[in-house]
Length: 251
Image (cartoon, rainbow, N blue to C red; front, side, top):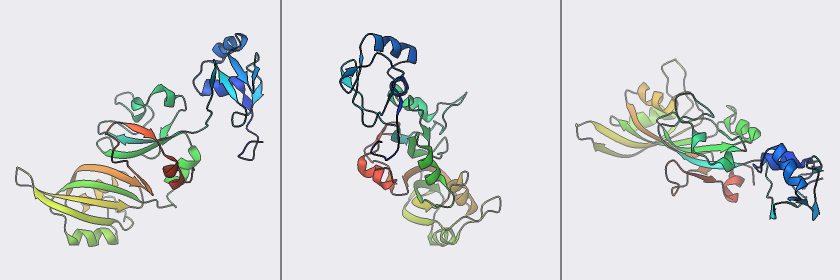
């Protein structure tokens, strides 16, 4: 039994291949060469079962750190789509190094192609379901620049729920006005933040269209209690910290 309280034994070659150490055929050769050691014993048969959580596995002299899941925070850039593959556009997976691609991560939810900001990538399907379940109403906060003067009337409308172009009435949203300015062509711009509790298609943009305004810049800064690292440059990513993992129930 592992620390998780359940049997976690797997074929040794499966464990190592899943971590990117080679194909099963390559690992069979490495085993015959004596390159794989388990609990101090050279393992000539890579088909043997091991517990990657409790057994000490060494590959070519280095101890293997096993993990089943990866959790990555990406500062998604505009122009990249939230998908695992696409025939025309770059996807968020194109931004990852091979050491993470071997885990076959996927984006949790999506951001529009021209939207930037926080995107969680993982191969933990259960977590993705928990975070995306409509019943959970997990809050998502966005920062935006909007063409038009957003005022207190808009704040009240958003707080009551906005009727979208298809007749759907959104859940109440928390709209905060940060500043107003004027663009060079005389158009009024409003800098705002908006927290919504659902994820309808193009929802933020459609909410502002419903009140006669247009979003010209959109960035997601938080999802639940998980916030985008302000020091994470656009287009880069990192693994979640222990504290951040605890925020999503994966400490």
